[in-house]
Length: 277
Image (cartoon, rainbow, N blue to C red; front, side):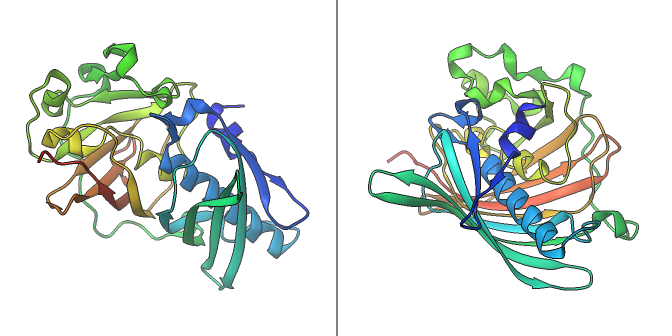
């Protein structure tokens, strides 16, 4: 089983919740990557939709839209996930889900999300979509593993990341200040991306704040993702952009294309940054 599938493995509990475990290999600094927690939340809601439908095929197996609010940092360890179906329709179903961890004074809510599920396989052909940027292939991009090991967050052991050479000035102390970071991504253990893991992909790149010359932790306050298609096997290409920074907050927009050049997910998040005084 791949490391990602192990992280998505949830066990039903008597109280209607689901129990999972996230190890420190998904850490960014000392907190679990928010995209991984979103994927866990989506997995729990997908499973609850399947349970509520009973035996037979799942008619709404894919996340179409998910909006998550990050209430506190998720730490390595057990997570308790509580999904609730809000509505079931012919083509879509919607629900909410909360992720908790035990704290010294009781449960602590980490993430609360709303999500709509459908069937991406039933989607019509693309009528309009942005083309993938003209970028070098993965073999001509900068391998993130070449960075000093002490600078790599633990999560980078789970991913292969190749950064576009035009967007890596910040690595050498010379940020371009264009508000763009992009590159190729895939799981290091050979697992292909799917609709659930795309929710991780939009939040797994180095934050675009680095290209603006801003370092340190960039915690996500809210993230909304729209999954547009099942990704083809192989690499995905992720582009992050930002054009507004005010009051210590910035937006980060992500667009992800699969190995065929099809747009498969897009997102926007609001994140907090520390700006020089």
